[in-house]
Image (cartoon, rainbow, N blue to C red):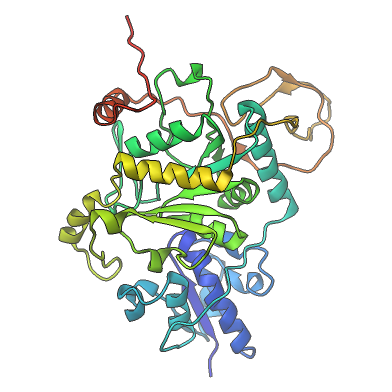
Length: 397
């Protein structure tokens, strides 16, 4: 019997969800010298005790001749499993059914994701810096959007209705930032109030390139608030508490409703939704029906904020200290050099000569200088609908 080559595609969330099924396959088929072709990226296979040595990128040199030619190629597609599209199993269980030839879903362990000490130190430094600048000791990471969002001029929209609206995201952040340190996990920069740089309530937008470094930040932070995207799967792997807001998709499929550490707020069930047959068909009628599935009312927004507040508890001031990590100088001379901007786009002049220490992740921390002309109208709409909002717009003379 030939060994297998499993092709795992899709985003990082799907990759994480495939791990328990692949672990089970390795356990139950010890004689199969199988490999994994990481079409969706190998980030979360790295460091895995049993899978890492079996993983190859799909551009690996001589992959076909050396590794695929004598194996059976299998491309699991969990969205095409009957149990999945009938809401009888989770994404991880759908992978398990297909990879391991099951007829019914079974209980699975959490995904195994292992960070090294450099990654954890990098996450710790980010969180400590945010605490130091905001003066708040409790930190929440907020991922308001999934990867399917589209930036259309000054506006942000998700055609799959799995992301928060910009107005809802701004409202939630502005309520939480008064009492807690907020780290926004987003590739898209958006202001949360006009003249934000003058606000006494700072939020952090670290432009972290590596998803593993984001995993470290989530691991060190006190709580996570997100949507149907990779952040919640990282939380599951890291045993972290999370508030997850769901729109067009179903919690049983894409989240962890049985996990006591997950508070799932199913807005889609309240607003109305239909199952979108992703990777089966393209159904425009269903997507249009789900268009408002994650548009939250004031009461729903307040429920999300209450969930986060309950998880974080009473706000406390940061009583520690933080020293900006220094870059190791690999040159021949010990010269002072400009210090890179921090999570808030701030700089502090000149660094002293660098001393050898643990390396830090390659973060791009400078805040993008993007102006959104349509933001004032977005906030005006919010104020018009929610008179009790704390957002105030200054009038320019």
